[in-house]
Amino acid sequence: MNSSSFFRQGILCVTLFTPAAAALPQGTQIQGAVVKQATIVFAGTVSQLGATSFADVPKSAQTIVVRVDSVLKKPSAVSLKKGDSVTVEVKDPSAFHEGTQATFYTDGWIFGSGVAVRELGHEVKPGGGKARAGGSAAERSFAQMQQQISDQELRDRIASADFVVAGRITDVHPWKVPKSAAVPYRVTEHSPDWHEAVLQIQSTLKGAKVKKNRMVVRFPGSRDVAWANSPRFEKHQQGIFFLKKDQVSGAPTAELGGSQVDAYTCLRQGDWLPMGEVARVRSLLKKK
Image (cartoon, rainbow, N blue to C red):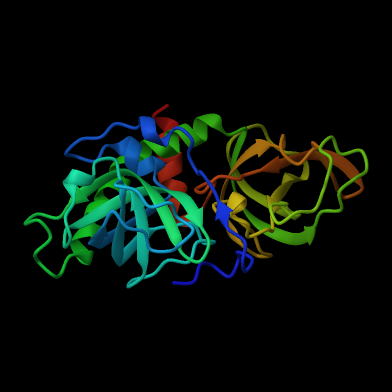
């Protein structure tokens, strides 16, 4: 299996998406924390024990090879599809045998000529994986668990945001980094390639009224795995934006209409939602 074209040929990219992943709770029922923490979720069938799917991964008793039956969640920068073979470093190898079908909740580990992940948790399909059709059941189970935690996630997202606004992007352009930027800029494959979007506010759900109802939102144009989950914006795009004052790019202000204004970011997956979620966000705001 080829990894995403995003990775340079011949270079192994090693990424720990979640350093604290090993401390997550494990049990017979997948807990909300695991669902929320997992960056790569897929249903699959174990094909080999004590093996790896590509040479760059260190083989051990804890590594198994899993054939992907369906992909439920992944960053856009990671190339993964049905039929691919993935190396999974599991917590308890005795829980698996060849032919076991399960849903794997995982974190990225090694990306190169293939994909290797570390297990956060798993759910074995009833019947030990002997039944053949299973992707749809895994998808339904995953969707149900995501819905159970989504309201709490939204509450947390609202609470941590400086502004929550509904609006439309009127302009997008690359950001010309000022010499006064606090962060020294050295171009590498992990550079964010900052862009700026001008956001026309249609309604403010949280925060004070903004002058002229316009804001500058800074976002990474890079597809590097370090920024794989960050929203990217296009002109005329509408939605709900969960914004924080920019403390990442090195320059807290931006030019807008000839004046310097605060710059904002929304860098996490889910910091932008479609307009259809306005009613639910308003409802959760009222319940605070």
